[in-house]
Image (cartoon, rainbow, N blue to C red; front, side, top):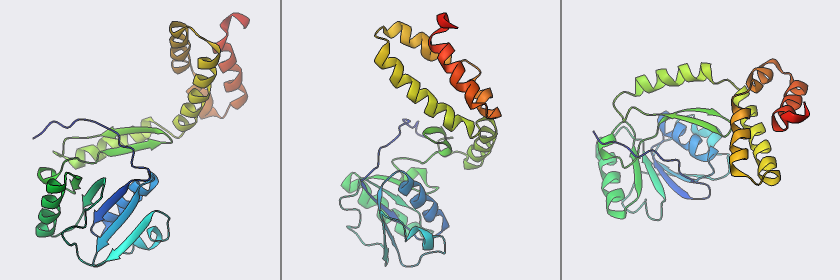
Length: 213
C-alpha cells in the first residue's frame, strides 16, 4: 500500500475528464464543479443525478462510450464506471499521457485518491485511510461533522478579515503571531454559536488591543 502525499489541487478553470455516468460519477462531478473545474463527462448512459448537473456552467455531457484519446489535454481524470475493462483502458491512457487519475475504489490503478471531506466554507478537513477502509473514513467524517459545526465557516471568515487588518497595521511578525494565536484560542467560537455578533465584534477589538480594554 503506497503512502500518499497529501495535497489540495487548484482545479479552477482546468479541464477534467470523468468517465462514467452513475451516482458515484455524479458525486465526483458535483465536487469538481464546486471547485471551479471545467468537467467533461463521458458515458453512454447517465443516471438521474446528472439532470441538475447538466444545467450547471462548466460541465458538458458526452453521451457515448469511452474512446482512446478522450483524456487528451486533461489536467486530471476520474474513472467511475462499473466495467473493469474500461477502467483499465482509462488507466493505461492516463499513465501514457501522464494524466493524474483516480479510479474509484481501485487505488492500485490510481495516481491519486479522493479523501472523505468535511467542509465549512473555506475550511476543509480531509480524511484518508489510504484506500484501506472508505467505511472508516466515512465514520470519522460523521464524527468530525458533529465537532466542527457551521459556526466554523463564519469563524474562519472573521479570522481572514482580522488577519488582513493585522498584516496592514502591525509590522512586527512576532507580534502578529501572538495576536493570531490569541484570536484562535479565544472564546469567539462560543459567541458565534450563541449568535452574539455584538459580543464578537467587541471581543475582537479587545483581543487586538488589550491595553485599551
